[in-house]
Length: 148
Image (cartoon, rainbow, N blue to C red):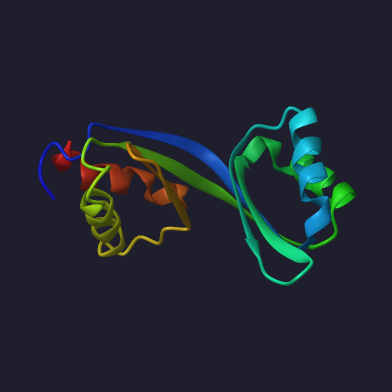
């Protein structure tokens, strides 16, 4: 990876990953609306359909909103809940992310080959967002700084 691949790195600390397995598919819109009405700021929502009538949902949100979000989710959808607190969301901006995707691949490889577990990532044409253990955030910044 070359210097200049990354234009900016920022970190949000105290992020929770909240997963709902076997959520009834027909209740998902109501569930997301209930979180919105409660003014809970959701960073990322991911859904995968696992069975005909049920899905898995994965939310990222601030640790401070976790108990309220979990209460709302338990009232609006049945499922199996998994909560992982004390994460960090690292947002990496770069110009080399559009095409080819080699810039993003290089960053992910650099992090993984450094022995850091990536719990979730998402991309746009200019941004890579990664969720990792909070204790690994500074290490990732140190690893990626030479490529700014």
